[in-house]
Amino acid sequence: MHRHDKTSQLEAQLGRSLTRRAAPAGFSGGVMQRIRAEAGRDPQRAPSARFLGLPGLRISFPRALAACACAAAVLVALVVPGWHTRRQEASVAMQTAERELAEVLQLTGLGWVRAQEAAFSPLQDKDND
Amino acid sequence: MTRPAFLRTATLALLAFFASGSSMGIRAQDVPAEGAALEFADLESKADEVVKVNLWGRPLDQAKKLVGLRKNITSSVRSFMNGLTAVYRRTYRFRRDPPSEDDVAPVHRQLAEDGWVPMIETADRQKPESLSVYSYSEDERVAGMTVVTREANEVTVVKILGPVDFEALSEIGSGLGLPVMNVATTDIKKPAAAAQPR
Image 1 (cartoon, rainbow over the protein chains, first blue to last red):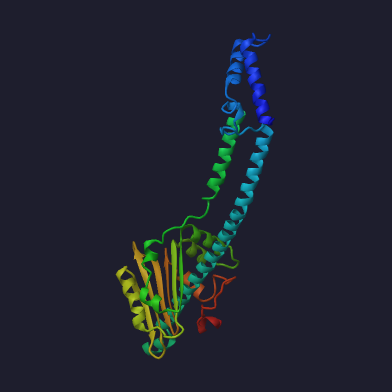
Image 2: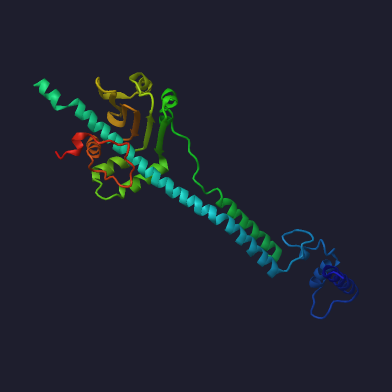
């Protein structure tokens, strides 16, 4: 018999016995009502039988935690290299921007100096004299 | 909170975190109007090589910080550089047909239409070279400068926006004030006068 079927059978048996018998000592009416409600549910549809609200996905908490950790590890493995690449690209872009700014400043300064030299050259001064 | 509810919330939070991480890249920005106007289709179609530089906003701020970290940069150059709001460069290189004055005419026309005033214009009749310096004024202050150079195999247009400090520009042009470091200056020619000590 499959483990899942066995569990379902046991739950069904428990449900039947709980609906027949009186509440055990120490159990309040509210607690018994919740137990009966839970036991009376279809195991496939009961909240306790679901993981992340997915019907039919029965998994214990430690396994769910391990699954989450695995999923997170896979996501990190996928995302971190891209993030690293983006940072490298940003660093290269900054260096390029620095070089471009310096070049534009030098070209502008050079143009200004050359224009000044051409406009106020010694030859022109001599002609003016 | 029940375990499934907790796990569901935790998983969704995790997914949301990674999803938000994918959109953390630098967003592409549109070229501002000043840079968009600096397009010369005829020159570009004729040129064998085109260099375009558009720097403004955050990339320009970062570049200013990095350039400002260089040793021996003078305070006047740093102050001038920090005041800049945008810089643009267009370099058109020609291997076969040298550029003529007619090729550069649309550049001068465009600058005149945009309100730029020519400060100095020089041309050498014996050489295929010309140099023009334009300025742009706002509130009686020079708020921008454009240099157009035509050489035997290259046309370069550089435009800087922001308060212009001509003394700082002279320092830069003379090879002082802005130390050259890790800069590929193969296309930057220094004038003969700058190479000699004054």
